[in-house]
Amino acid sequence: MMNEILNMNGYGLYVWSSFMFTLLSFGTLYFVTKIQLNKELSNFEAKFKNLDIDKVEIAKKQEIYRGILSSTSTSKI
Amino acid sequence: MLNYFNPSNTLKVINKLQKFIFALFIAVLILGLFEALVLSPEDYKQSDSVRIMYVHVPAAWISLGIFSVISILSFGILIFKNKNFILISKSLAPSGFVFNIIALVTGSIWGKPTWGTWWAWDARITSMLLLAVFYLMFIMSWKIFEDEKKSIKLSSYIAIFGLINVPIIKFSVDWWSTLHQPSSVNVFKETTIHSTMLMPLGIMTAAFALFSILIFLMKYHTELLKIKNKGLDRL
Image (cartoon, rainbow over all chains, first blue to last red):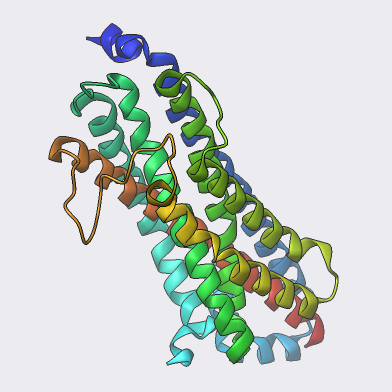
């Protein structure tokens, strides 16, 4: 059974390499995108921590910043 | 109507959806892989090499669909100057490009046992390669120029010009004599593919669509953060 699935009537190399390439592409795209997202979140957190208290209050009043803050550890400050 | 797509509203939805879509994608992908590699029958002519269809066809469909959406949004960008359309287009392009490459590579792997060659300058393959060039030009147009206005205009024109290629890809198998067979899955005509093969194809297409949504949400989130990081500097 296992050999049949791996061999695929002699087409195993073609079938498995197609699926492996697809999954590898998915994994690469996911991790590259995740790294970019985390980098921007870290930048945001670092910048936010360095803001003056007045500016923090202004930012917290804006809905978009509240949305971002809810997804970062900065929200706990 | 356009306010519905306001970034601040969208960000709340993105945060909630991201984890849910990731979990759903993994579940649907596992089911799809099991159907495609184990349960589905071999083809009477192509034997087990037909299983390549379950990654090749969804990848081609989704890359084509994403490019069509980018092109339509580009009209909106030029006419309405809607900034959110720009963010959506930018966020869709990377996954569309990767799906395009997957379609080309898996098609090439499928071509070797089926046609006896890795590559042929057949109308469908050539037009898909052209689509990858349009994707690449669209992505590069955001990296080449410092001036954002230039990037917006150029990327929109590339996407609109590339839209001409979409019906060419779709109808290339009908208009020219190509190595590709005419489409077996049709919306308006009879579908000629057997249900035992249609089922894994449908599940794999759903998995690929979920993955493209997941990457889109992550990219969109990143693009919003880039803008807001600039905004923090100006506070």
